[in-house]
Length: 418
Picture 1 (tube, rainbow, N blue to C red):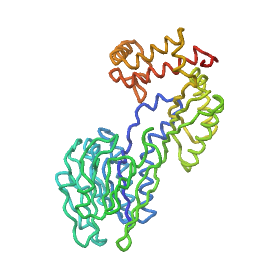
Picture 2 (picture 1 turned 30 degrees about the vertical axis):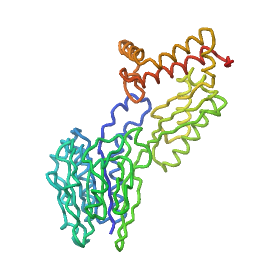
Picture 3 (picture 1 turned 135 degrees about the horizontal axis):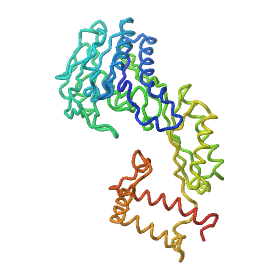
Picture 4 (picture 1 turned 180 degrees about the vertical axis):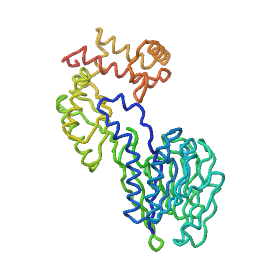
């Protein structure tokens, strides 16, 4: 027996903000979730899977485009023609969806209920399989749904289908929380989980698996994405991750510590990008590049970041198959700042002042208020991962560090610390 376990398709997820990135492959990125779903169906057909499980978040919240649902229905019809049934439960995003409520799906799709756990022991009776599941009736389900699932049925291969944060995962809302002990206590053979977007095999006795999402949607969802192929032979279970994504997000860190200059940093980035493209096996790579390290190249990079970002983007174009979503220079000056702070001159006074500001929370908050009153803050200081949070002293301390790292090399030029 074979089956495929997928979750978190987020079909047609609206990738907001792409238009502000020059050169972004907007159409390719926006169509990626559909193409990944097509790959999922093809996997089921190629492997002659007996059934497909989808553990929630098929849709993406309040997205209202009914073409999304029609596309899903068409893909499920491909499976219907091959007599492959599909079992799914709704997740938190599906509970918000207007698409899922109005759409009639092909009769090979079995959506388990939301009011109480449902057991389907009839559809796959010829395989000796029973599937237990309960979906989300509303977005914020904070109850332990798993606790209400029935015990295993004897003489069946029992599968639990559940959208859950389990005992908590960073970056994911604590919906339908439960414990491994609760899941194991049901006596099931396999728990098909969803909600967490990173693949994780929690346990092998019984099997408790998050397959991760089908397609990465932004720079925090890096690496291979896809579904899990499960094979059961003579009671033995084997699981295999299968990559189905069509765009591969990558976080690439370039160590500039030993680079002689900015040109060498660009070459190191070129090599790292080429390796990422090779690993992606023909997929488009969307990369976020961060240059780090205490480096002799720091002065050049921090002094002309626009120039060196352009150089990196040109290198990416030369490599081919990769788009730079963002470039961040996070190098540090090799200057001896503690010794410079001892100088009896304006340089020393500046460093002492910045050091004092870092340790004065009231002064940091006042700095935040002053920044907030500025008429036109750059976009990156107002929104996104690198935003200055006006009421967050840690973010403001980081800003002071950035000022120090940017300003001192410019003031000192080629001067070395005494």
